Each structure stands twice: as C-alpha cells, then as structure tokens.
Length: 123
Ligand SMILES: [Zn+2]
Image 1 (cartoon, rainbow, N blue to C red):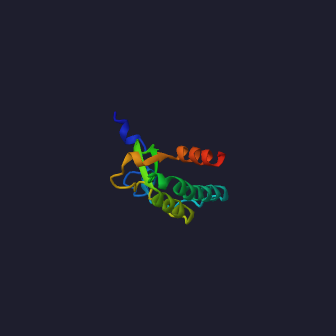
Image 2 (image 1 turned 30 degrees about the vertical axis):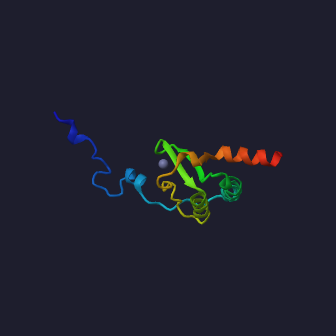
Image 3 (image 1 turned 60 degrees about the vertical axis):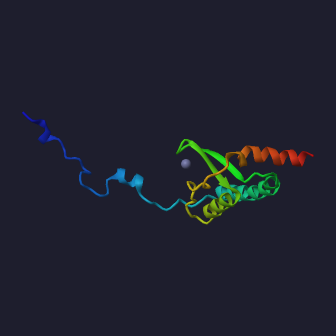
C-alpha cells in the first residue's frame, strides 16, 4: 500500500510565485515614518559635524560592525552622507559599498564621534 499517492501535492510545486521566492524579490522600500525621517536627518547633520571636527585630525570616516557580513565596514564621510540622503529620498542606500582599501586607523566608531563632540562642547 503506497500512501504517497494520497498525499496532497505540494501546492507550490513548479509555481513561480512560491512564497519562499518573495524573500529574494526586489521589493520597494516601505516609506519611512516621520520619526525615522527625523532620525536620519539628525544623523545626516551629525555626520557634517563629525566631519568638521574630526577630518582635520585625519579621521576619514566611520566604521560599523556589519551583522550581515560579520565584518567591519568603513564609510567615508561622503559615502555616509550619500547613504543617508538616499534613505531620505526613499532609495535603497548602498550600504554594502564601503570604501575601497580603507586604512582602518583612519576610521572610528559612530559612538566615538558622539563622545568627541560631547567633549568639545563641554570645554
Ligand atoms: Zn555588510
């Protein structure tokens, strides 16, 4: 007795709209909420301040630990600002386009920049 023939067929077999394939789909970004836009604008402003304060000291940008790649990504000030402007414009920011051949010693974490600005204001 073969029960296989009594099983329902895979409802998505051969279906190009298999729900699993949507994970790969190039879907438009959901629009930012006002709150998210506000936060990105603030970050964009901060990047300008960080740059003014730190670029004269040889800091070229910021690095992040990327959870997707499990490695550090280095971003020049220009690239950071461009990513944020793209986000505000509703475009997918090229987050995986870090600087080519970065000098790791010329990049600092975001939190370091925040602390640096705080220190300058405290003086
Ligand atoms: Zn990454």
